[in-house]
Image (tube, rainbow, N blue to C red; front, side, top):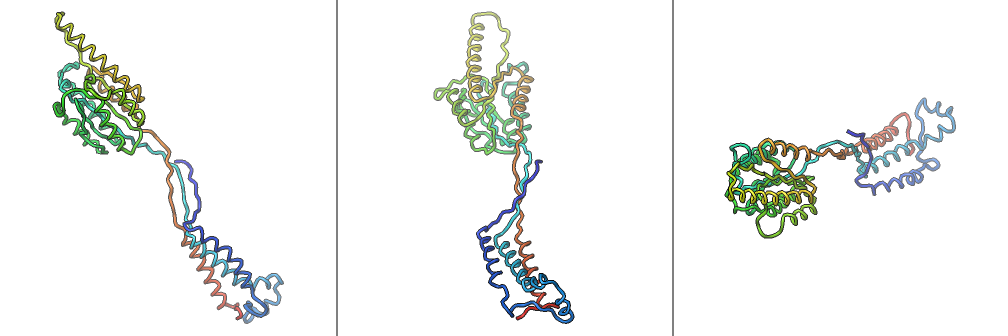
Length: 337
């Protein structure tokens, strides 16, 4: 915590101009000859004759000084003074994050180094990632040939995790529409008040829908200051017999993979994010850990102001001064008339 600062301000500072009238009143109320004089009673009358001229001159003004001080205090109280204490504290900035997962039918392929499907591996890694984002506003977007919000913006991590774990294929029109996934995700991110705004886009296929291109959509994300980390799931090819059909299939898969990776690299490069490629569960878990570190909470200094109303103090002092003047009139000293 940094050092704090304190200042005094007034809620109604215009009342302070009345303080200019206090010295005017004091001069006008100065006692004239034979009026408003302080006099000593009893045995103090003899002592008064032995006082210096300065002390005797001060006596007539003393009650009025008390009255002037009382008026000044009441005016300050009317001006509504308050004390503002400002100090700085370090806190972690809350961000906005959307996880966009591909649920096209190709995600059912079990070709990533174990018997689980691509979708199951993606669900496991993404759920673990979501549990660790304790400060972010989270949202889950699913896409295939179209995109939809599966879990709207929330701070309930477990709700997002449940959404990820319940995903299935064939919930949407089949295909791979990266542009639609990004557009829906950007809409969710714009609803989140925190910054930075990050999209984690995971897919296993190349964009294959007509319309706005993914790279053009990435330009929109860049303008909105949204960072996109893209993850490509690339399956491991089986050792098939070296026949013409197998060779052609491998060439087709290689071409599609190269196209997918080229587009995803471009999306991440344009938006300031990172591109990743995963071929097994361990690699995918490692990628999500890297993204978690890249998007670690940012510490920032925030100013915190505390306001304390002070009008009761000058009000109390003014009443005390006024009471002192009244008490003086009934004490061993008196005022004439």
